[in-house]
Length: 331
Ligand code: BMA
View 1 (cartoon, rainbow, N blue to C red):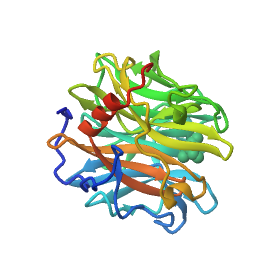
View 2 (view 1 turned 90 degrees about the horizontal axis):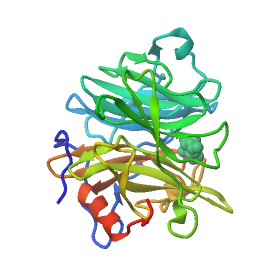
View 3 (view 1 turned 180 degrees about the vertical axis):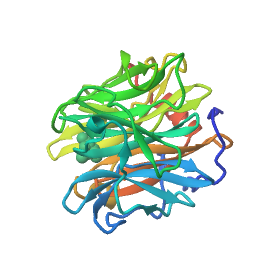
View 4 (view 1 turned 120 degrees about the vertical axis):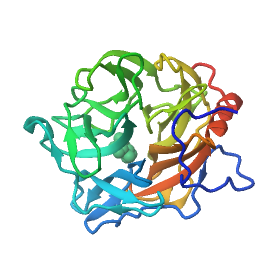
């Protein structure tokens, strides 16, 4: 038995694993939990992030509008399943040059100390990583962009590593990047980022082909007694385009750029109609995980086919056992 280090969350959304499922992750039986038309002007609501908030839940949602402009919106829920999303995007306070909006997408939310940090793919003459914080999901303070363009998938650790804030990210290009490895960066103040370390990359060849094209970090890493549990996305290029699946890895607790274990098999991939059919078919894209340290339960929120939002369940033991059962020899 392994342990999640962190807060308990008695009201974590949860369903038991149905009999006959051999995968370590199983879907909520009433998926998708958020439909494409969840707010009046949305074309799609997908790669989005949630956290426990004031006895219920809050989140930041990627809603593409009916003119297909990408932006991020705050939302609230009592049970983590039924969501009320604001009809207007988040308005940021901060330095005028930094808060200018080009586009915003794929948010992550990370509770650290007394506040909630939001990171997202932020257009600033190319995609980079935007960072902001809020105490209440009403007022949002934007900080400096973490990196120069081009970068996507900025994911903060929920506490400092040594003396520094820490972030995983995925350097990219201007388009639908045909490459991508995960890097680790450190910062004394969430403004200046350095000490960049290579964490892990694609697996070329036969050993784990589902992650042969590019990979990127997903939810905030989960602290466990065995190390940081990382859920990430991996992509293969097929004759029908990219297919996005989820994988998991275990990182060293004190030096998280060192990968201790990684599963050869994906843990969830596009199988259902709402994952296989949509604006971009065959995409499962995890951006958040709620955890309950009392039970080891994990609830994963993921975008489906770039159109709707799904919920899936696992436990810390399921994922750690799966890495032992199907290990990638060369992490
Ligand atoms: C990535 C990002 C994601 C998207 C995925 C699949 O490059 O743009 O937002 O879900 O492609 O289209």
